[in-house]
Amino acid sequence: MQGVFVLVLTGLLIAACQSAPVKSDWQPSTLREETIAKANSAVRNYHQCLNDETLALADDPADPRAIADLILKRCEDKMMPIKAAFDAEQVPASITERYMRKTRSQGAQSVLRYVMAVHAVRSANEAEAQKSNPDAH
Image (tube, rainbow, N blue to C red; front, side, top):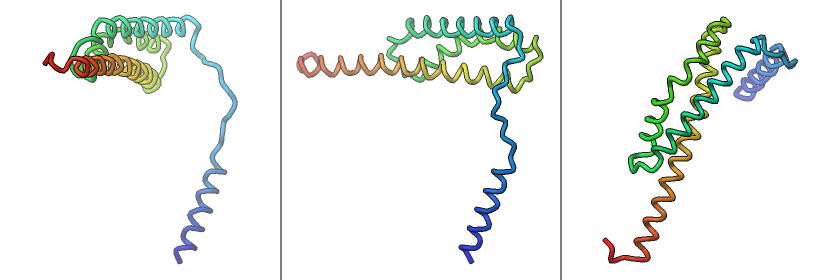
């Protein structure tokens, strides 16, 4: 009985996959070049802000996640020109939010990766210093 059930589900799954229309043709953006340029400029400004803030705060001994959150909060306003450009072009809000979320996520990963690397190097240096000079503490 169980084998028949699995067979029926497999058949339904295959039929569903075959009936779904697949649109594989690439469609160019319908956004104006000016809008794309504004969005790209805002993304560059956002990444520049992230870089500047990361370099300024990476050596802070606080938790790397807290540092990354602070950096992201300080640079959040750099994302608003993207929303403004997309809203002017009447891009649906869901698409605008998805694009901004992707940009934030990539920025957050980059910032956190860098801050954690700085902390790891500092920790390794401190451990090495303690090894070489155990009487220091």
